[in-house]
Every structure is written in C-alpha cells, then in structure tokens.
Image 1: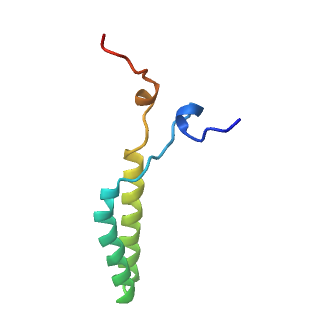
Image 2: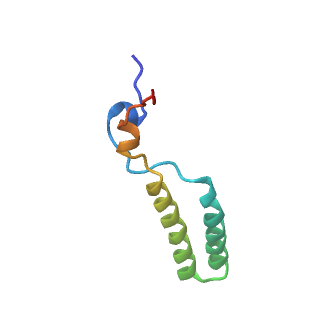
Image 3: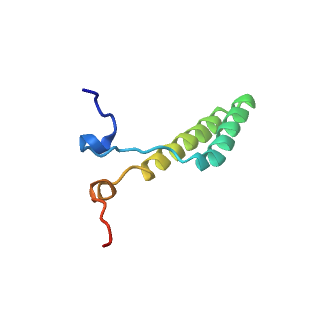
Length: 79
C-alpha cells in the first residue's frame, strides 16, 4: 500500500507552504547585495542582507501555508 505524503491525507497542518516564485524578485537582489557587501569587506552588511533574504523566504512560505478550512471543507455543488 503506498503512503501518502500529502498533508491532506494525514490530517496534519503543514507549518509552511511553497514559496511564491515572485518573491525571487526581492530575494535575488538581497543575495546579490550580500555578495557585493562581502566582496567589499563589509561583513555586517553581508550578514544583514543575507538574513533579510532568509527572513523574506520564511515569511513568504509561512504566508502560503495551507489552511485547515480550505482542506477540510467538502466540495459542495450549488444545486
């Protein structure tokens, strides 16, 4: 019997969802700025920009998490 890895079948709520591809428009410049700051011997700036990129992705994944109401609500036909 195959195991279902989708959270809809296990009943648990995932704390994080998939990241939104549009968040890359903010993450890529932050990472590029962190690399440039590291190249220019500004480690504090590199750490701040790198942490900002990580926080942005984590918040985006958290905002896109599945909700219980959307998974537990049965599909109803308007008849």
